[in-house]
Image (cartoon, rainbow, N blue to C red; front, side, top):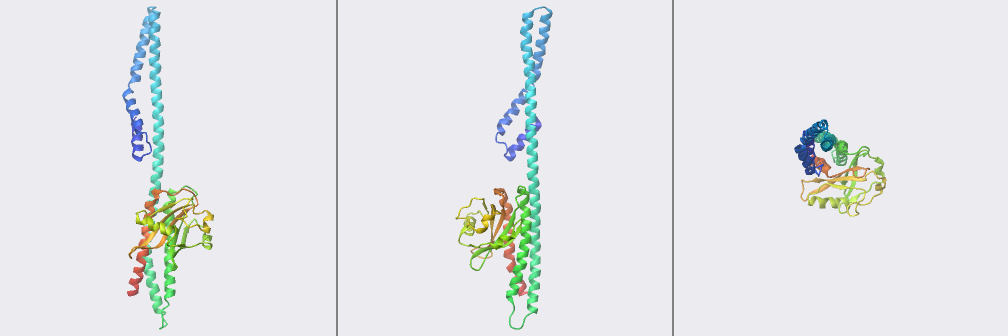
Length: 328
C-alpha cells in the first residue's frame, strides 16, 4: 500500500495523473476497510461453527439459515482481498512505468546538459583561438606590406574563413545538444544565415545531417520580410525562439526552392543579436532543422536560448578582439 501511495505522489508531482484525488480516495477507503475481510472471515467461520452445532442437533432449518450467509461472508472476504491485490498490482505496474519514463527523460536532460557544457566550453576556447589567429594575421599583413598599401581584403577574407570554421564546429556540437530529445531517425542539422550588403540573409554555414547540395539552390531572405521580420517582432514581445512545423504562414516563411527537399519539415529558429549597438542589429539567424514532423517543442527553447546567446557573445567579441590586436 505504501508503494501505491508513492506512485500517487510521484504522478501528482509530475502532472501525469489527473485523477490523483480519485486514486487517493480509493487508497484511503481501502486502508479503512483492509480489516473488513478479516472480520468477514471470522463471521463466516462462526456461522460454519453454528451450522455444525445445529446439524449435530439435527436442527436443519437453523443449520441451513447459518451456512448460507456464512459462505456468503467467506466468499465476499476472499473476493475483496483478490480485488485489492489485483488493483495494487496494477498501480505498482503504473508506478514502475512512470519511474522508467522519468529515468529516461532525466537521462536525456543529463546528456543534453553535458553536450551543452561542451558547446559553451568550446565557444570559450574559440575566443582564445580567434584572438591568436587575429594576431597572426595582423603580423603577417604587417610583414608583407609593399610600402604602398596593406591587403585588407585578404586579411578580412582570412578572418571570415576562420570565423566560419569555428562556427561550423559549434553548430556540430549544438546538434548534439538536441539529439537526446529527438526520436530516432530525426536527422537534425543546423544552419546560420548572415545578413549581406544588400540586406538579405544568406546561408553561410551548415552542419549535422544535412545534404550540402542545398547551397546550389539556396536563396536569400530580405531583412524586412518573412522570418527576419517576424523574429524582430517576436523579440520585442519577449519571444525570441520560434518553432515552425510543416504548415507555415507566408507572412512568416518565404517559400523557397529548397523547401521541396523536405529536410526542414520541423524548424526551430533563434536570432543572434549584435547588442553593442543601439538599436540592436541582428547580423545572423540560427536554425535547427529536421525532416521529421513535430520533433521540436517549447521544452527545448531554453537550450536554444543558451545556444543563441553563446553565439551572440562570440559575434560581439570578435570585432573587439580584432580592434584590440590592431591597436596592440
